[in-house]
Length: 368
Image 1 (cartoon, rainbow, N blue to C red):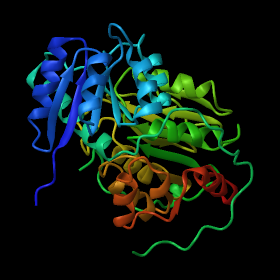
Image 2: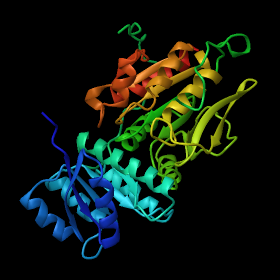
Image 3: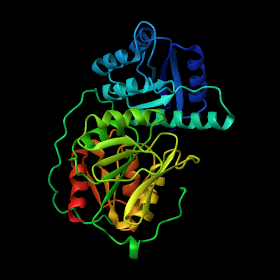
Image 4: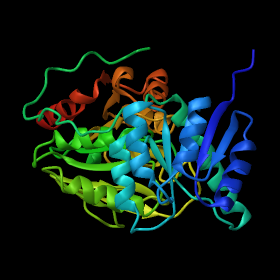
């Protein structure tokens, strides 16, 4: 028996955006556009008749802005919401507020472009909507995660159960384990809030961290800035050549791949153009595979909430290269997709709840 299509309600005051989104989403056999509304009041009346599986929601609209509507929706009738925004730096801070208020993801408003760019945009939009349909909507509101200030207990025994780089080999000689640990993190749907909780739990002397969070370009800079104001560690959007230093976190910029590289005893990042890898750019697989090659047993890999399999193969290569690998557990994930795929491939050493990930990373740092 065929699965029911995902029913989507589009809320946007632009008729052209409503039409383009309808065309893109309707082209996917797993998605059905339930209706399109020009403002939140029209949408509210439509929701009273039928509850959609996913709502795509504009930010700036007449009568009521998208953030206000989102907050009312999360308080009264939680539904997975994907914010739909223009690709502007000015609006990115507002989008961060939307994610904190309960939106599960962000898409960029589609616009007329070259065929390849439009097709790529359509892939991303459909993937985000499908991920949102599997998400468990959670009302907004920041919580204060416990500070991970001491190494955790010995980890449990290891489980037995094509990117831009070739498969990694176990490092040797100059690549042998040193005292410096670098952590590479991958996340997607639900990852913005999960990463905030994880980073807020770290002390200022945490190991150097590189993160790939699936997010459109321009929004990653605002995301990094927001985290920098909340955490003891320093957080910034990665730039080509940035060093990976203790107490510092680099967020991969949207729209480009970020790789870990090593020069002597120091690590730095390389930010590159390139095609979609595992349906994403930046791709977790690209980061993880580069970490396997550059850091080997000096690396810690963490895969967090998100749909799909990006990062699963790269995490397996990290483990094979001697890295310590961690997956977020199903109970604490908004979408248990990426961690599940990594676990199924046998690439995960430890499966833990979100609140314990910081402890695991610090344990790896303490034992090095």
